[in-house]
Image (cartoon, rainbow, N blue to C red; front, side, top):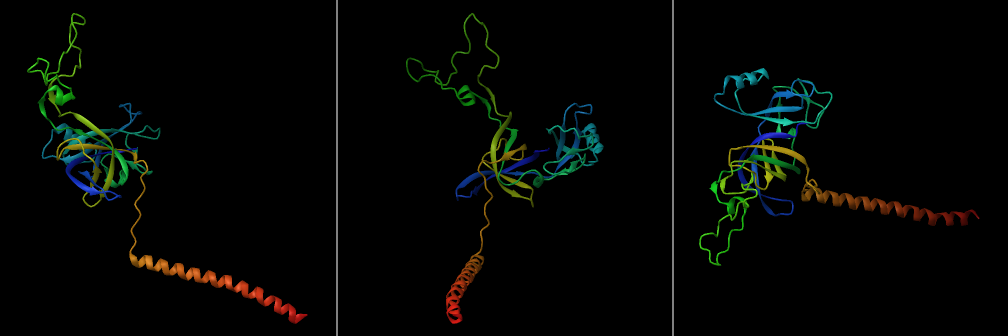
Length: 276
């Protein structure tokens, strides 16, 4: 089951939710993803996955160009990413089960936006965060810093001690210190899809998304937002008037039906008196 697609972060915008609140959102363009390779546990790879290609490039290396042509794709592909899929015994090296339908995917086939996502879905967005350059411990890791008084003059933004004494006699690996910040893989979970445009193949995702504009992002479907309900369609005043008229006519018919049995019950005693 393929639940991840590749896309491009386009811009930030704002939308209004069902309660009329203005919220920030990110527009992500997701053109049809191309299936370049299918891996299965029964084959030489040993696991189930689908390799997706996205975007075009003026020129690529010959091995990569040949890899695409092997799947029947003639144009050079810019990005290749692999997506793990749920293992199934029925998978073969040439086909894999599609998203939510009984269709199968083949190398060279396209996966469209509407096949995977819909409004109200909860998604995880993964990308490369913006680079911030060399930063200190306070900005990079949120350190508190030193006191501004008590005799010190230049240790307000210093990280403090980085190790012990003779034991262990070294600085532990992974110690949080100043260094390059950003330009690393980052993910944000449980973002809500608030808009979907099939004409320009774009998603509107509530909140911020990692990376800068025109960067590649991976969107993974996690499920539905808790408590989400599809918005009801607003009906025109004319339709409401027709419903009111229909309701009034129905009520009048019910009253007529109730009056008829009463008349019948009143006429029955008179008929009995005449018969006697």
